[in-house]
Length: 284
Image 1: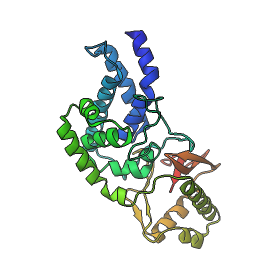
Image 2: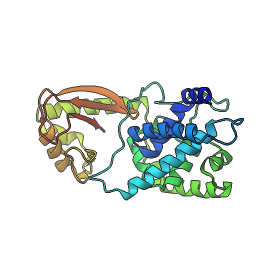
Image 3: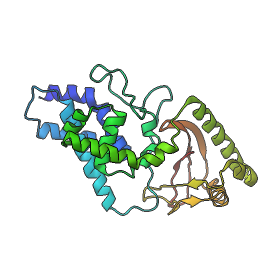
Image 4: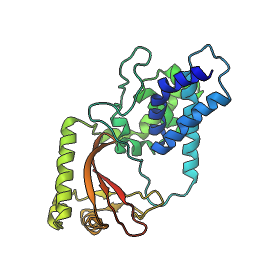
């Protein structure tokens, strides 16, 4: 069984991580869930060892992800919650096993890259853990109704009802939906560059000109570092906020990265005041 599990880990780890990250919005939690899934497989293996292991692994990972989400809802969180950023390659999806059931791609209603964007992951927060699982399996990973029902241990009728409600909850996201494209990537990179240049030179008018009147800024220190305790709304407030924090710390270095399907800037500082993170990410 150990040899079979090693082989299964190599074959299915990326799929399980991809699903767990989209379920939880946390790379660290996805790591833990994948590890716990295989620990469960070692300690309490499935009864039918002659059947494919992937459906059983997916079922366990989903149950662990849903338990995590329920636990997170019960815990008090300091300030707005944001997904943890993950580095993505603009030419390829951030994760996936080769082909599944003979399909080389898993592009469903929502593409693989779109389904790791901050906009999509934040939209998933409107869903219950069960709705989230059904939507991801059906609309991202292209599971059939029967496969989804087996994975979540629901009747096919309940899967259809849950899926319908999940799509209703995603209606506002779908209405304003902007899937990542090469044109959007270029525009975002350009806007980020202009924004940072204005911050570096304390160009107040330049920053304001780049922002929409109803712009919203969300910051998340993970409960460890200083951050705004509520969303900052409006051009004037967001401008003042970023100009105030732009030069905190010494030895600041910036580099462009692709995070969650879109350009972002990663800042590292050699020296920062107490309570301030030495590494920060800015994305628009």
